[in-house]
Length: 250
Image 1 (cartoon, rainbow, N blue to C red):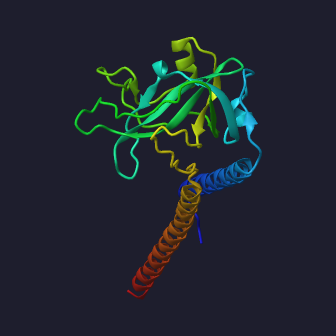
Image 2 (cartoon, helix red, strand yellow):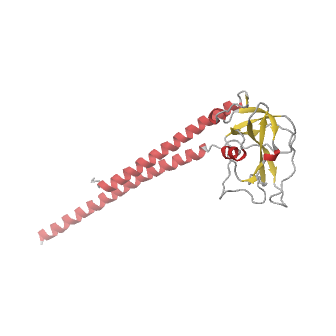
Image 3 (tube, rainbow, N blue to C red):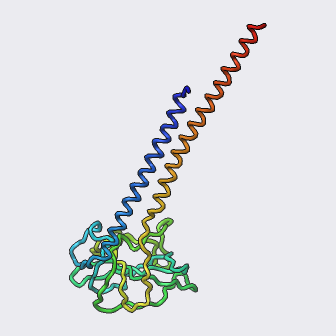
């Protein structure tokens, strides 16, 4: 069976690329599975104390942490478009002035939206004086899709997202490079039913199968096209011999 060079090369390129992308998605899934195992291990490890010394994000993210200090309600930020059980609301993010010096941002919990006033904030409590905060260290206070600069012109404390470094530059406060996702109850009427970290391992495996399926389809198409072309050539050759024989007999 004669194989045409350029169509065969194109099919080989498609197969090589899709197979490689499938392996890449498989490797991503394995990385996420390893991270998930780390998260489970961190959840069962002893809590780490947050103090004035900077704690690198890579070494502390997903660890259980404890901090002691005073909340700064004058610096509160409400993260908009954070639904809970299909109800619109905010995440209440507030700096904690650490007892030994330094600051850390705390995602204190979820607060329902005032349905009568989009920029209205429902009442909640902020403990006065020194408070103990327990939670999980996270890279941010949750990230939501944002168009433009986000936020609310009528209420400057309402924002779509909050970057720790940018907020440190804005306020002049030396924050730790992470946010504490508070888990202990401080009697503030906030909801702390935090969603589990979404790693999307199943999605990566799905993409892997899709890429490998495309590779298999390309191989099948190539074999089908080659077989069909061969049959056409064979049919043409047989037709040519019949014509020659007819001329000879004539």
